[in-house]
Amino acid sequence: MSGSTAKILRINVGVSDNQSASLDPLTRWLNSQPQNVPQPPIQRRPGLRFAFYGRMSTVEHQDRVTSRHWQRDCATELVAAHGVIVAEYFDVGCSRRRGWRQRPQAAALLAALDDPDRGFDAIVVGEYERAFSANQLQHLAPVLEQHAVQLWLPETDGPVDHHNPTHQALIMMLGAQSKREVQRARFRVVTAMRAQAREQGRYLGGRPPYGYRLADAGPHPNAAQARWGRRLQRLEPDPATAGHVRWMFAQRLDGQSLASIARALNDAGIRCPSGVDPDRNPHRSGDRWTLRTVAAILANPRYTGRQVWNRQPAHTDADASRSEREPIRRNPTVD
Image 1 (cartoon, one colour):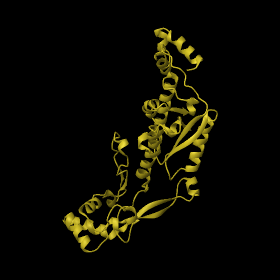
Image 2: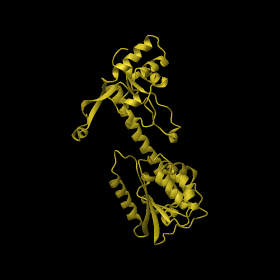
Image 3: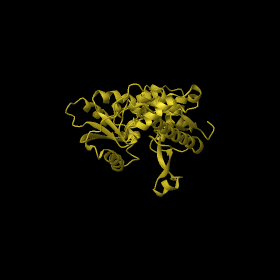
Image 4: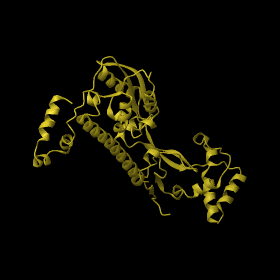
């Protein structure tokens, strides 16, 4: 902690209860921290060996070379007068919401801490949000301290002092800000997609249901996207398979069981969905119809004319606390 910051804290500690009530929450929190056992400042030893950690969220919408380059440049500038980067760990296609042990490269970096000959003394990142979200750093701090490994951040202009109330407050603020950024982006994307499905009836991606195929639906409504050649898509009946779907619904309306429908399709040699599209179903044999396949098709509201989005959740175990979202359905015609 700097001398000026300590002086401010000592002055504020002596204020009256009325004055303390008028202070902002962060100042009151700082004043509440114990000041009687000052921690020695972290030593910035020359010639430190750094391991650089970076991350990019997606593969399809980001350039790995560009993302890695600017993050490493920030990290290199931060440690230039104190040492050199001797190792690199860079995760690609990992959301910041994943903990470090759920990211391949971050997990490898944590595993390297146990090696006494790991070859680095400290970890440096190019930006807090590239490495952490919410309270991830607070959970990681004891592990780093256990192995006597410093963490350098541009936001702290050097090593993080986990015993410094000012650094503690800063890390809490950065974590909350990073989490808020994720939540805002998610809310905007989900809200926009919901509106596109409900109000415009747009096809928003995913595998076309059996019996349908993708068709061109004109230029993208966003002018910039249209200039880049992106176009909208819509679903239309697939001449090769749509008739089989109609037959399945007709048979079910006539009272046929799911098992008898599946058996009739197999006896007729009609290829099942995974057999029609083996590239998207490498985990399936694709050799025959099953009762579950027939039941899934007959229960899909898409075949009744509805536009369906968000029908199958895509979150992982890390998102288990999130509540299930209701699918968006749109049916412009009467059933």
